[in-house]
Image 1 (cartoon, rainbow, N blue to C red):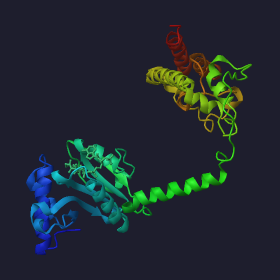
Image 2 (cartoon, protein in one colour):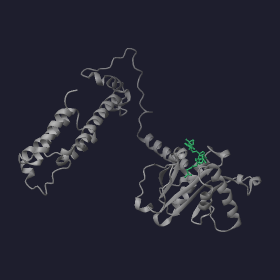
Image 3 (tube, protein in one colour):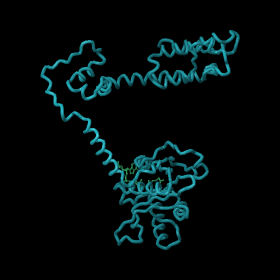
Image 4 (tube, rainbow, N blue to C red):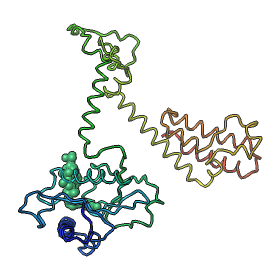
Amino acid sequence: MVRNDGKPESLIKLVALKSLFSRQLPKMPRTYIARLVFDRRHTSLVILNPDPVTKDTDEEVIGSICYRAFPEMRFAEIAFCAVNASHQVKGYGTKLMNLVKKEGARTGIEYFITYADNYAIGYFKKQGFTKTISMPKGRFQGLIKDYDGGTMMECYVHPSIDFTRIPEMLAAQRKFIASRIRLKAQSHKVVYDPLPKNWIPHLEGVSRANESAARALAVPGMVEAGWTISDLMATTGQGKDLDRAKNALKSELLGMIVKLEEQQFSWPFREPVDTTEVKDYLTIIKEPIDLLTIDKRVRKGDHYKSRNMLYADLMLMVNNCKLYNEEASTYVQCAQNLETYLKALFAPR
Ligand code: ACO
């Protein structure tokens, strides 16, 4: 770790860092790099070349991450991250990031934020950074500034993970899971005879859509191994076709709901009727429904199996409105407009 503590040996390293960042980040103004690297609130983690020939030269620095911690808000901003050109794609970038995370976890940092250069987004993703910022805005707003041409990314630092021992941790987890599976698994105990050459599975009563999955399930041992018809449908591609059809319907229905929500006359239907205010509503309307509830049902994905089912709910909404409200009211006017619109929207194609 190096920071501007005024000691000559630190300053020599910081000069080498400034020149590494200037070389590797040519679009960054040099003066800006120098200002941040020498700023006393910034810290740099450096990987040094142990070869004595490189001592105190630019070549001594293999790579570095320069960051500023905001301890009171428990986050840090990575200002620069670079590995010397001759050492790139050898794992040093990962090593640097893991060391920075370890240091962050030790000092109470929960999040690292950075503005990633477009070319470096892939690298940051591999280091666990995402474009979704989950840290509350109030913690960083006003403390870090926006950069043009960079994408804000965030990484959560789990306090109990030792980021320098990830491979060992994964290997230990894999070993543990395998040992637990061995306790339950029967696969090494039961051996089935090969299927006879002209084996014909018993498929009576199975629909055509389920046929290949049912054929696979009929193989002795499949059920005992825990396979189900839906697992098999997913793997035989039939499930994929069903999913595709389901997704297509879902996006079509969602598109319709969005169109409806945009219509001016849809305002009375956008949210459920507040029955704490409208006390007698439930005595008259037995099946309340509104666009928000319908929207949620569509997004859930398995409620509406067809356009007609959605149409039925929308017409229920129209009829509820006509039933509860005075004929001459604005609400009924809106319901009539909606009904006309629905007829056109759901007209057979
Ligand atoms: N885009 C996509 N993936 C990348 C990139 C990239 N630019 N660079 C590395 N990777 C991948 C590697 O292929 C590797 O993948 P793998 O684990 O599947 O094999 C993984 O990221 C880690 O690679 P490392 O070898 O650990 O990374 P490296 O030592 O090359 O360092 C770094 C990466 C720092 C981006 C280096 O390439 C570099 O200095 N680039 C130029 C400077 C730069 O762009 N810095 C970031 C600017 S943004 C900022 O500083 C806030």
